[in-house]
Image (cartoon, rainbow, N blue to C red; front, side, top):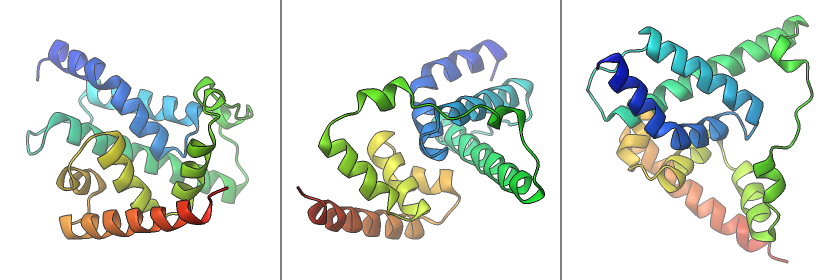
Length: 168
């Protein structure tokens, strides 16, 4: 891809990419912004290259997921060693998006999602919020399609139970 085409494609996918970064960063806006910035730098600098084996969106979401995972590992290592990352020095503040979410249904959904395994949460987010197929989600998550389907079905079933149990 030509640099201008690449930048245009990243810009077009930014809202979806940011939503996915938020999901990968446990809804921490500051971390999602940092991860997405790192992803854009990698892509535009040629450190991450699209090879055409999937759609651009699927490939990009995979880069976001791997970058977020790397950031989490770095944060855990720093915590184990007693080090501080300069970006972690400020306290997390609720985003305007989080402030706007006030309905009981959304809070119940959040609680239920947080009770799922990481893989179940990821596949449900990719399929429902990012409008990807289970096959595309499997590619991003680097798991087999069968594994993604299993996490998808188990996650949906668990969500149904959790939402029924959490009714007012």
